[in-house]
Image 1 (cartoon, rainbow, N blue to C red):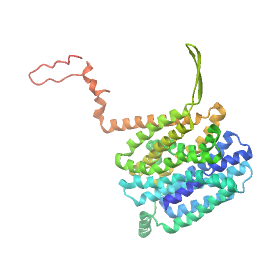
Image 2 (cartoon, rainbow, N blue to C red):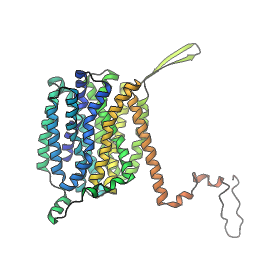
Image 3 (cartoon, rainbow, N blue to C red):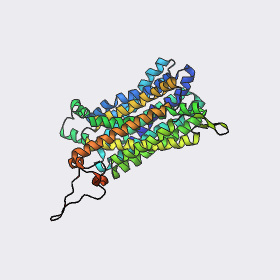
Length: 436
């Protein structure tokens, strides 16, 4: 039920990825204005995550999630009455409350499973990201048939119904029931927020800024990108954008299971490695060349066609899905008593990525005039995250095993160094290797 509820919330949270295209046309918005509009719900859903995570620890996930979903449903319904750009931005702030349900769900679901199963459990819950694909599949047809206002009203009604169904069919967390029975008070807000001072938490947040923020940003941006670059209609663009959204959501379950089996660190290396390659290839702009050949100029063009583009997106979505699960595998292990606050902060920073990057995508388009500039930004982000992670892991390994500092950079070349001494057996004189 948490997964179903989160799927509905995510469908509402990303609704502007479809109806925003029509609103952009109606209002004559610039690229940057469009980016701000689709990113505003992500801002709200991100900023409230820390406090929603803390309140979940204090008051229980059932009650907090009910209030979040009903509030988001009301704001989404009122969206259908907006007419001016400021009104749309104000409504978008309310719609964004739906994104806060992620922090609630992580803190709630993790309480029902032991550490060795939390990766898979949170991966299943996180698969609710597929709500973005639900919107891309269904919203274009509803919008073309009934108008974008009907999309907002129908999505609001479904969200409200599922909010009530979630509350009636679930139960409170075991530790909440224990506190009620024993009369123990929950941790104060200040104590819940204490781990946020650790640099490690912010490193996890950077990982999530790319794997989740980048996912949300592309989920919002792709329909517009496909219409403009490949000249597809909105229905076809929504279908193809789902080719990115679906694996980016469903494979999160596999990512959680894999993190349980081989460790979250190895999964993160896999995530960043694949993402670096895909982001680099996607960032290469369509380019025409003229080479001075033997018999005169030779002209040719390099460009990513629609089919290779979708394949690369599928691979990028797969890699991001593994990373989203792996990041949240860390949190209950390192901070079992602060899942709400730490998970809320990591989710907040990730969500801010989903807010900032669509605006940055639009601004980069206006500034450079190059459509693939959005993927250039993603390449810089993932390369930076991979570098920081590798350096941090190296420092931790040296701290835990000081003897590693005495090893040469390439152990197999130790005999080539004149500074290395070789101990000889008793009664014999040590001779250095012939090649030293």
